[in-house]
Amino acid sequence: DLAPSEGFLLSLIEIAAFPVLRQRVKAVDIMTRFDKEADAVREQLLPPIEACKAVVGSKAFPPLLEGVLMLGNYVNAGSSTLGKAVAVTLDSLAKLTHTRCAASPNASSAGKSKNAFTLLVQQVEAAQATDMPEFRAVLMENLRKCYAARDCDLFQLEEDVKLLMGQVRGLGEKLPGSPTSSSSGEPPLLRRRGLELFLAAARPKVATLDDLLKDLQGSVIKLRSYFAEPPSSPLPQMLKSLATLLDALPERVQ
Figure 1 (cartoon, rainbow, N blue to C red):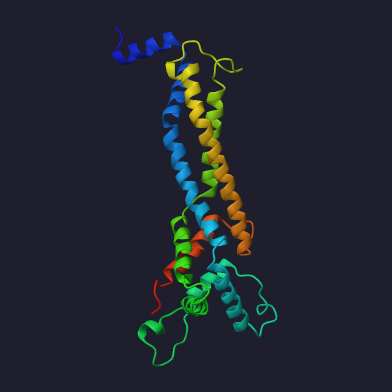
Figure 2 (cartoon, rainbow, N blue to C red):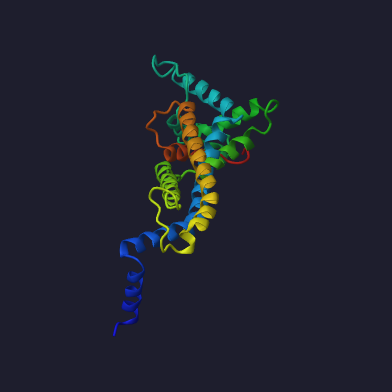
């Protein structure tokens, strides 16, 4: 007499060979998990897209970067190489947050602890008081988006989208009539009707993920160009550099 577990395995083998059963179990597992995994990837794609577009399309960054250029060129006016900058890198922005500014002897304790970035933002905010009174609010909202997306992994997202697209493509090949299909003994979920229903919902989802991924890749290129960053600059590093500006910037002028 066989143990229950062994009897169960024997009955499975009588239905189909083990490799066939394994393929069926894998296919059903993919179908049952697909929606949750596709939605999770989509939720990971959206924040970095929003962050990149928020910065590149920001109304607040152009006057801020203009101020950074003016400050940097003024400070480095005596240098033949550093005094003629035409673009602002993320590294130069980050350095401003670590540069303490000298204050007058009568300044408050809060004023004495300000960094160059905070003081620059205050100067730009004052200059934009008429044209853009919401300058600080817009800038902080842009930086919050960068903070929210700072841990994104572009390489992993590319792999996740590629995997999901491959899974849907593989299940499409199982449709009866496809070159690699075999409907004999298939469970209901893997027969024509079940596969058609799944693919009708899954194909638009992976197409959307592919479009979002391309949107993100294009947005990353634009962000690198915006800050004169080399093509090798990782997205998380760029977003983390921008997120540090948020930590250095109080919501209100002190």
